[in-house]
Image (cartoon, rainbow, N blue to C red; front, side, top):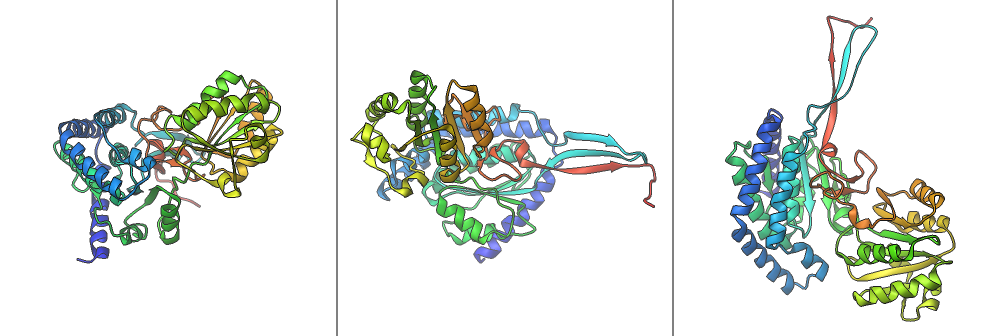
Length: 418
């Protein structure tokens, strides 16, 4: 069977599964999810063994520390995976919910209802926990899912998918509701994103090259989980201790994640006192700083920043630094160089905070908090299927509601239009 025929079969199976899923009530779906969580824990050793194979291959292939961190599974991360599944099961089911109801003068009653999207394709790299997060969010919202992970996590993804399928099957999950494409052939991505009539939505999660490849070939709707060039701006009124803690957390707590800070902007009035303190604190964490001339005048050890640095998602212990003369100039820098993901201001000024939150065009905008909170779990959404940097139909962390669409149900008593 050719790759095209194989993927078409996967698509047709997913459509049938989506129709069956649409008939399941919330209680049934929750029992399926809890069985999946149980199976993840029961297969812990098999999953860790598969992950060890992927880690060994990744190290031999020279994967970066950030990618290896994303790839690695531990007992703690497997426990968290199972716990996340249970949390999704406990969340309110959006499917079937009435968004709005109204009556027309002619007696028609119109209801706007949340319904599943149908078949969702998820294309992702490195992080095997996405296999579980994506699958359970789709099942909770009655969507069938087709997963295509990266070759670097193939064994891990397969072990997790098998656990999910087995757990679901024990509670009568419809066949083919969760399917994993296991071929490393890149043409599989092109085939998946061109399956008009079978796949309703594709979500790529990964590097810029993956996103561009998907957008170049897609014939079905795409929501991008694009790169995170995230900023923290330290305003002249900022509490220095608070700012230092936020800067360190946003850069160092987990630098290989898309919501980590990549550029630090500092108001020129606070920079002479703040930047040397920040540089020392970041150096203790092994962070390399690359800055503009003004920042290098204050801290000569900072390396020169190039124009490309301002656009770069390092996913590593590297940070760009720029001194700016105002809140407005910080906003202009963020809107020009940023990726519309997550950006923060540290300030004691309500006026500065208001201006920043109104004018920064990003999915998540923070006042006096770290950008590291841009996450479905941290937002109380349970797991997330991605962080959309698009504006339609979803933006920011995508939880259950973002995996639904709506339809109108119109009830009458024989009305005809004249």
